[in-house]
Image (cartoon, rainbow, N blue to C red; front, side):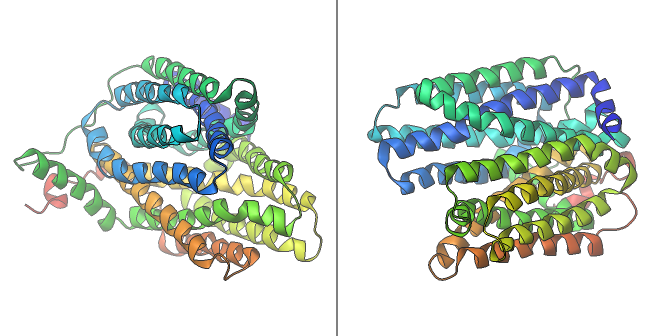
Length: 425
């Protein structure tokens, strides 16, 4: 199993991309812990902490709508290099944060960094199929999920210690350094990676830009696989937002735990993610992406529902830790399968816009899921709320198995649509 996954590292350029992602993710997770802790310590306000999160989601929702158009115009490798440097630069104002009155700086930095993020992420998603052979694409996507989970294991601990020892400024400098190292590694990727531009007869900057974005949306709407996978992300992102908002409440009220138990549970899922990334290559070579996506989502949902309900029989954190480790494995499978289906069913010149559409849908559903928590808070108990969100990946898994074609997509060279098939004048 491990050999099937690690074989992808023989691709030099993929290895550079992977290590760059691991290092930058490590810095991200340090900031994910360090920034909210600092904001709460300075203000004592949960609302202030929530505003930081909201500023990031809003920025991703706005920039994600046009990042895909630009990524399809530009060299994807260069976008990632410049994007990482830009993300390092926007962190520097955090060195000025010293009191509750400076929280606006945190919100501004979060907004700016999150606005740049979609460019880097979409460029990576569009670049990956150019760096590895098609048969290794599912394993490569599994390994990309692995680096995030490795960083998730170590980064929060470093972030917590760093904020105590060096403050938010120290975390900002460390995170900026990881972005710069990532930029250097990606700069070493060989070749130019500019997609062939689809012919366009539109005139005017705004009209051309809007038309190119609409082309991407139109391709998604006319391709059953892309439509189902984007719907899959919509359902699971809605559920993820609910989970992220109330799982700490579940840990405290239902399990009788605290910050330590919550950290164990989150780290346990990262352990499962690491295991899933390591063995994912074997499953990717033996199972179709459709099967990985559907079965993985059903397993993920079933284990989640067990996690939320076992305290009715035994109130202890141990079964939760075990189930969170197990659930991390199918989570990686579903992510890798969904990425593979999007990449295989999109032609290179439109791939950035298709991933941008996915990102926009994800951000919008995160906001909707957060809104549901606000709406149901105080009206529905936390276990019921988690059970409601657990139904969403269950529905997504069933939809994937029923609606996705059993036969894999044809290679992109034979499916590239002409501009006339995706434009309306």
